[in-house]
Every structure is written in C-alpha cells, then in structure tokens.
Length: 340
Image 1 (cartoon, rainbow, N blue to C red):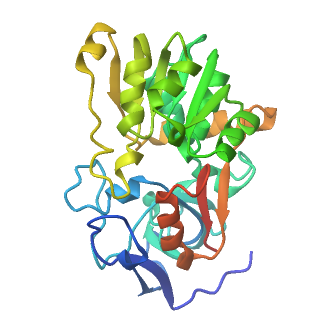
Image 2: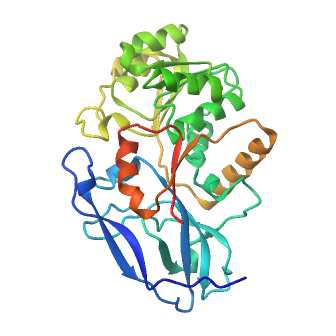
C-alpha cells in the first residue's frame, strides 16, 4: 500500500462563542493545527465521513448538564467520524484500517490507538453506514420502550436520523401500527412510501393531539419522543394505559425556543394511565454498537431496512452551514458530511 503524504497542517472547525439564541455561522471559526508523524502508541487518521446530530447544540451551552463534555470557545469541536488510518505507531491499527472515533470537525485526527475503534468494511455497504443513528434507535425502541408485537407506536420527529430508523425497527419487531410526525407533505410521503410507516402527519396542520388521536383512536402503546414540547404533551394525552415512553430528544427546544424543551406533564394522566416515562443516554457501549451494526448489516442484506441519509459534500468547511441547516430541520434522515 502506498503511504499517503501527510500535510503539515490539518484544518478544523472551532467554537467561536456560546450561542444565546439560534445558532448561526458566526458561532464557528476555522482553524489549523500542526500535523506530525505519530509517537509510539499513537495513530493518525484521515477523517473521511462525519455525522452531525442535534445533541451538538446542547454541547454549545456551557451550563448544559450532559454526560459528555461541552464545547469550549477557541477549541476544535468533536463528533462521530469514520476514517482511514494513514500513520500508525501502534500494533492495534495498521495503515489502511477503517476506524470510528469522536475526533471529528477536522481533516485529520491524532490520538492514542485506544481512541479509535476498528470497523469491518465488509459488514455494511459503505463507511458512512457506520455513522447511522441506529444504536440510539435500537437501544431506545428495544431496550427502553420494550417494543412488543401488536404495539401501536408514535415516533415524533420521525424523519430525523434516529426517528427514521426507530420507526422501521418498530415494524421489524412486530408493531401493529407505526405513526410518525414530521413537518411537510413531502416528508409524510417519505415516511409512508419509503420507510414503511403506516401513517404520518404534519405537526403544522393543526393541534397535534387531535391529529394523533385520529390516527390512533385506541391510543398508543409506545412513544419514541425526539421532540418534546407540544408533541410530548399530545402523546401523554393520547397514550393508552400502560404506555411506555422512550425520551430521546428535545428538538422543540434546541433552536431558539425556551419552551419546547420544557413541556408540561399532565401528571394525573401519567398516574391514572400508569405511564412509564424513561429518558436514555445516547452514548452506547462498544458491545451495543457492535450488536446494532451486525443486526443492521443483516437487515440491509435481506432488504428489510433502508438507511435514509443525506450526503453533503464540501469537506470540513461545509460543517458549520450543514449543522445550522440540520437544526432548521432542512434534512431527512442521518446527515453525513464527506470530509475527504
């Protein structure tokens, strides 16, 4: 294998300042860092693909209480990435290996060999497939919501990277009916015609509780909530007795709204209907990720699942604009940026 020549610097994107409202391009700044041959025990990875998720918006708040570090002004941001080892000072990784890691928002990543997780190229159709939000969708739907055969399921924010897979997983695990919420007629058609949802509605087109109740007249047994706000409140109202809620995200409060992330809970409804409301972290163990990748690969080969994703070209420079567009809900499925 021909050894790739390393540039002397690696371009990266840094946080310029903490947002006080909606995220804009002014909150990012480009930078460069020197790139050298790795020391013993270290590797250099060329970042090929990176995924962007709304959780990064919360990491831009200094007072956010998350189980992961927040971003710091003047410092390169980070996120899930897959890339190719181009220099190795460790027996754990050879040049040419595909690895997954969290040192994104930059062209090249340098770190100890243990920071990079090997990925089998033959398992999935392409490297970007390892960046699906499947581990979160799988863990939330199967482990947290305990999806069961015959369930009626509501997925809020169903066209985002997590929701699009969560709905498909529910169907594959025997759900009788899967309903999704989204923001346009085009996205409704996408959910029903391409992803196999039984029904979907546009949350702009009227009170969410009324729309959901029409599509689930006997109530919903499982709620996979990516949104919060009115959609969470509506799901509590329409929930069947004993319904299980997997609380995954709060998109309604992540782009300039102070109220969307703080929905009102109809407490007596939750009590009298014996609802289970459980939040779950979107960080997963290596075993959970491996379990998902194996299941994902099998379903893909059988033609039973699709990976809805949007590919954005443009390298590292495209990351800020793409992230802002993501928060404005301009994409469907997982958003992956081609870095090399």
